Image 1 (tube, rainbow, N blue to C red):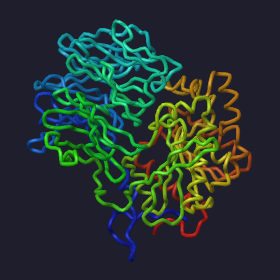
Image 2: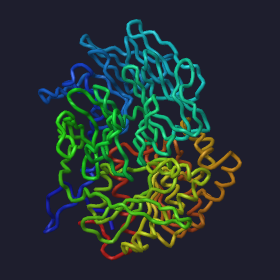
Image 3: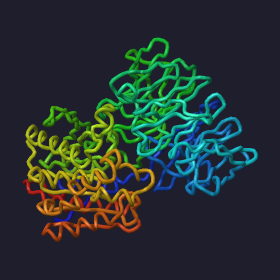
Image 4: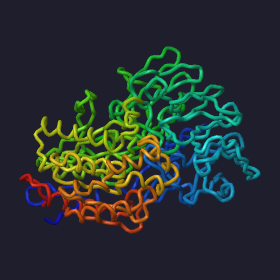
Length: 607
């Protein structure tokens, strides 16, 4: 059956309300990285992304008006990450789409090419100077007046990130292969390593006055830590893994007496503060928060949740309510489509499934408001990552069509402490597969979903896991959809990008172990097992992370084994699809595929 899309929401066809159209969930606009002026806090700098083009804007909080600050396009970032811009005196410093440093003041704007013409990122302004990262490998200092570059680091680490100024000197995060930034990182200064504890992840250094703080997992959980040894110790994570730059999940109050942090409660978010004198932690607001900044005017953040599209908010920190929560003002809302109180935006319920060894595998189940019995198990990528309970327009589209959605956190996921994450080491392609199958079987038994109405979906590493579930636990499923999936683990050692080039060393083992385990676990080498279920593979032809050849080889192997496989290659797309026409095709093609292959009565394309 061909999918039928009815544009608009709130219109009716006969007596049935029309479902969300694809155009409603292809979010064209976002507001990212709010940064209040340090002296004039009524000036709020933001990045506005419209139709994939990012520009620097400035919101006047007194008048409510927003103006575009620069004609140059900026490098875009993910919703809760940054590294694009900051204030430089009374003006701005930003990174252009080409990787140049853009300096903006009342006179105008000028761009400065990076050292040797290389692209820069993560600008950190200081007194007449700006620190930047070059090629994820070097820390450089720009003398703004002279436009002269000086390298700051000594080259002791192959990867560096997130420079800050502390006591007038640069400080940054560094790490070396085979570690990834969530395995072992250090705080580094020009004179040497400040923190050098093995098997400890350090991220997000912050300095105020002579004081310094960061987030690390020395206590088993990613918690806020001060340089004097005090720790906000609790069994919750205060940050996400460092897949992006300038994560700002914690900040300090203007008087230095309190710290605000974003807590992860098994995928749900909460904004909290701690009194540094007493250690008392106070809950301030629900929802996932990021990009925190605290001034005398209040605390600014990006806020999102299962029912909350991304928005820029300000909390009145001076006038807490009786329960300790802060009054909130919404300043900017990203999506142009009005999702307010739409029934397809639902909060998930927490569930836990017990694996054979007794480990509880957490997951979140989104129940469709008008369910028809279909279940989509959606596996996050990474695999060292987690989908928190934040705004997912693609989820809304499927929930609106009657599909319930299961989001498992297999071992190796973040958000549940270091031990849960490192359990993946050496076990990628096996442990994640078995954990997802455990969760699917539990939900089918508990909630009555049937295998003939269940599909597993995933992208990148999630695609590997989805295909692995199909190969090892096909009785649980009726179909698989994998976008830009890893299908040959060992091949990644030679073809993926620099940041992940050594990722297999922790996920699989040394090169020989990786080759051996890849023969056992990679979907490419299990084509006969995959041939028992229909597969839909989606891939971009210029993917730098997982080359399209991985999907092409798998499709050929499955067809040779007699399987039903559809491969779609999108021209000009990388690791994830950006063009609206391709995103639209992805939604409609996937719906048509699932309706065609999932046989429970009542599953059909909405009319």
